[in-house]
Structure formats: C-alpha cells, structure tokens
Image 1 (cartoon, rainbow, N blue to C red):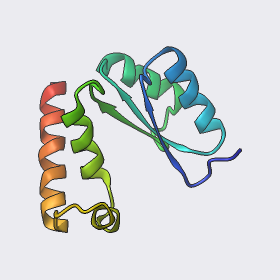
Image 2: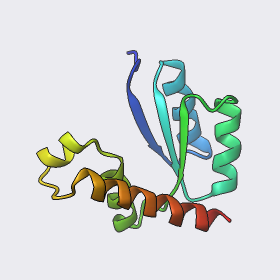
Image 3: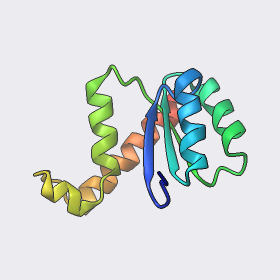
Length: 110
C-alpha cells in the first residue's frame, strides 16, 4: 500500500516500533507527524529519518494527556473538518489557538 499525499501521525515515534513505523511510512511516500514526549530523542530520530526535514513534523506531547492531544488535533484541522465535527472556532480563533499552542510548545523546549 502506498501513502503518497497522506499524512500519518505516529505516537512513541522517537524510538523502537514507533521509529520503525515512521521509517516504513516514509518509504511508502507518506508525510509523518512524529509525536513523542522525549524531545531530544525525537529530534535525533527525525534528523536520521529525514535529514532535510521535508516530510517530517515533530511534536513533543504526552499522549496520556487527553487535553493536550485534543488541542493539537483541533489546531491542526482545516476549517471545513472542524465544521463537520461541530467545532465553533472561526478561522481567526483557530489561528490564535494554534499560535498560542506553538508558543507554549517552544517555551517547553527551551
């Protein structure tokens, strides 16, 4: 199966089975969102799998924290999907929420 023009989210992506899954999805043409709680290992894995950073996005997140995961998913959805799922966010509110999330994530990394 090919994953051309698809985006795949892999949790626990910094090592082991998660990292192997990322490698396989990349081989099959996917773009990969690598999620893990360990920022250092996540960064190293991403650089190893995609040295140019063209097909991987990394996100430091604890998937056991439901609120954090929900926030990431809401902020990454196109407006038309949010409407289908009943979200009341306007495009401006979604962009503001996304910017706030990015600021918090960058602050957590420093």
